[in-house]
Length: 241
Image (cartoon, rainbow, N blue to C red; front, side, top):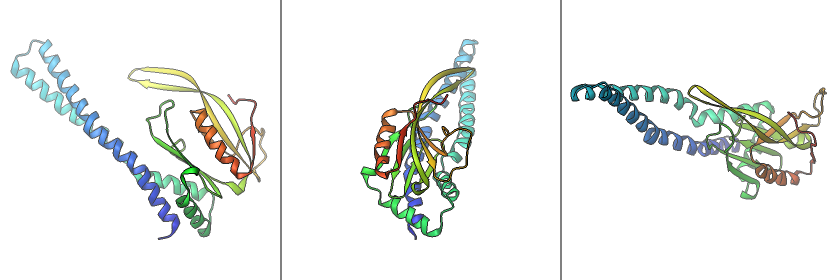
């Protein structure tokens, strides 16, 4: 097995821990709670309607099976999105965009597997609409790699980059619950990568590749690592809206 495939297997194992933990929580906590709530709700409705014991038990049974059906449908939509292989597929797609040769893929795999703890920053997403998913940034001699955020995989070949620029963006997030929507503003702290051979754009403010963070301290830690690359780093004074 080559180093590239070995690295992808390690990535599958890393995200697999989160996938299994999430599924276990759903099966052992969320789904049983939903079934209990549906059972109690149907029984309560029957009781408030003056039903006798037999009627209450029938309603409770109906609520129980309704809860099972809802849980089954929920799992049917949840499980495909929690397959570790799905996340590895995103990484493969990311690598494909860089059009790496077999030799470069092998180098990428070796460097990722050899990355030490001083060049890996692990954290948990805690921003708007995040679900406590794990994320991490890895810096190697030739690549910068962010995973777990959105998009899931961002891979940068450092030899392509002429400048790294910090910026901040004011964003609006929407949280939906039942029939209500909550809008709120937040600041996204970004790291923009500008390529050497970039196509001319209307504004130099837009990077070719960008990484976003909800926490300024996490971005600061990553920027400290990126200083090792000797690529020109600047602070954008104008926040993008």
